[in-house]
Image 1 (cartoon, rainbow, N blue to C red):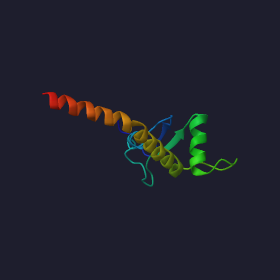
Image 2: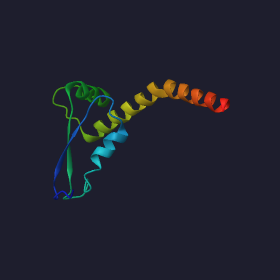
Image 3: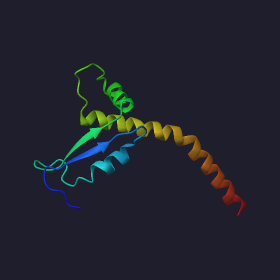
Length: 103
């Protein structure tokens, strides 16, 4: 699907969105960052908007959230995802190791 120059994409942000998935969604716009290229507009529910504002320290009214704030939030969500999944990955690794020893 080839999009015309100056096309704008809507990227929806949701809870627990990792940076990898955010980048994958944004990079579908092949001309992103070119002078006459594509642009992105972010849409987020109130819960996500407030979390982004908190991380960016932009909770006051009239302060606009920028793309870098969204990236910081996505990196933070990725870090939390990794932290939350370490016990699961460890138990899976132990289970795999035990199965390998029985073979």
